[in-house]
Picture 1 (cartoon, rainbow, N blue to C red):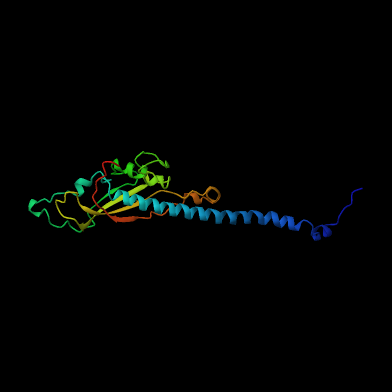
Picture 2 (picture 1 turned 30 degrees about the vertical axis):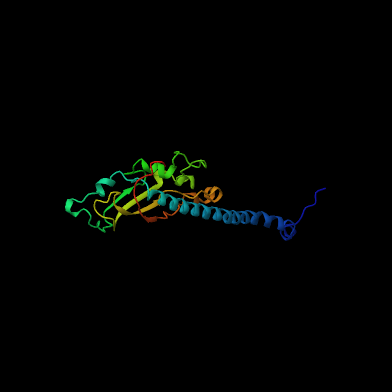
Length: 207
């Protein structure tokens, strides 16, 4: 025989309330926990990007120029031969840029980004590149800008002394969980420009 319960006693019954509350709060707790974990992972990616760009800037400062129009923008000799030996102009508006998306970039950019073996993430590479420190950074993501610094002189045998800025574009955070749920994997990592004064822009012949 089936016992029928009145509607009043059904709504006043407290059994199973704890279980229902657990089902409601558990996904929220897991989401908060995942947010903390992925926030730490995002900070790791941010730090990895900064260190990779710092390394790449030091490498690019002593490598062959990375822009295709470098020789046209920064001629070695003065227009008047009598001016050779004079200080180079301090004019930051005179600049040459490589990237993004490989615009005006030379083949030397691949060596700086990929390393001497032309591959990412290979620990045996004797001369690693930027992507050996952060595989997300590819040649198309790098932007390099050379500008007049006022250092050096016309006719300098090793070329002009310039200010070089290296930054990254279109590299997004990799967030497996929150990225898929909330679309946060479309957030770009900041450019993190690194500025250095170049030395002799000539790649070592043995590197």
